[in-house]
Amino acid sequence: MKFGILVNEGPYQHQASDSAYLFCKAALERGHEVHRVFFYHDGVNNATRLTEPPLDDRNIVKRWTKLAEEHKLDLVVCVAAALRRGILDENLAPGFRISGLGQLVETGIEADRVVTFGD
Amino acid sequence: MLHIINKSPLEKSSLETCLAVAQDGGIVLLIEDAVYAATRGNTAAARLTAAQDRLKICVLGPDLEARGLADRLIEGVTSIDYGGFVDLAAEHKSQSWL
Amino acid sequence: MEGVIKKFMFVNRKAPYGTVYALESLEVVLISAAFDQDVSLAFLDDGVYQLKKGQQTKGIETKNFSPTYRALDGYDIEKLYVEREALEARGLSEEDLLVDVTVLSRKEMGALMEEQDVVLSF
Image 1 (cartoon, chains in turn blue, red, green):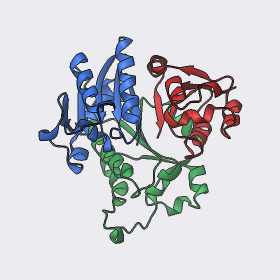
Image 2: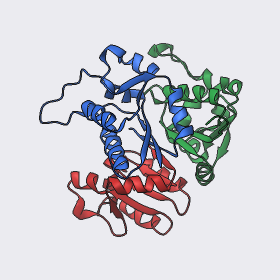
Image 3: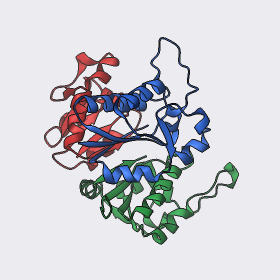
C-alpha cells in the first residue's frame, strides 16, 4: 500500500511530527511504501537544519533526514508556507526539498491513502 | 472509515462532532491527547461506551502509556501500537479531526 | 496517473484569523483546481465562521481572504457543504454566509465523507 503523509505542525511544540514519524517507520517496517511526506503550515519547521535540541532529547529533524536516506523518502516542504516562516534552501536539512502545494494534491491522487497529522 | 482524533475531549469538541458525524461501522482511533477520553472516570468515557455498538473504538497504546493511564483504559476499547495504526490506515480511508 | 479523477474533500473546522489554518487551507483548495479533481469543501464546527459575511480585517492589519470563497466558482469549485448543527450552535443561518452553500446535518455530512477518496483536514 502507498501512503501519503501530511504534517501540519512543527517539531517539539506539538506531537504531530513525532506521531507522523512513528507512523511512517511502522508503515515501512510492515513493507508499505511512503509515497511522500508533505510538510505544511508550521510543519515546514521540521525541515530546518539549524535545529539544535538538547543532547538528551530526540533530534526530530535529523530523524526525518535519516529515515529519508534509509528509505529514499520524498520529504517535501511547501514553498509558500516555508517562505512565510523563513525556511529557505540555505537552511534546509538534508533529505528535504522545497516545492509547491501541487505536490500535496499529487500525493492525494497517486497514493492509496493519505494520513494527516496536525493540531 | 477511520476517524483519527488527537484532542482531549475536555479541551475541544472534536470527539463529540466526530461521534455525531461518523457512520455506523466506522472506526475511531484516539491518539495523542485524545487517549484521555477512553480512561475510567473521564466524562467522555460514557459517550465512548455508548458509541461502541455502532463504532469500533481504538486507542494508541504508546500514547496512553506515556500519559500514565494504561491501567485505566475503559472496557471494550482496543489498545493498538503504531503497527496496528498502520494496519487500520491501510484498510480504511482516514479523516483526522484536527 | 493522467486522467485519474478522485473525490477530494477539504475539511475546515477552524475559525479564521486566530490561526493560519483557514487561509492556508484555501491555498491548497485553489491549487487543487489545477488538477481537475472532484473537489468539495466541508465546513464543520468553528470552520463555519470562515464563511461569515462582513469580515473587516483592517483593524488587525491582516489580509481579509474571505472574498476568495466567492471566487471559487471561477475555479469550478462549487461544492461547499456546511454543517447545520455548527451554524445553529453559533447563532448563524445561511443568510449570514457570503457564498451559496448546501447545508447538511452531521449524519449527511458523514455519509458524504464516506464517499470521498481523499479527505484533507487543516
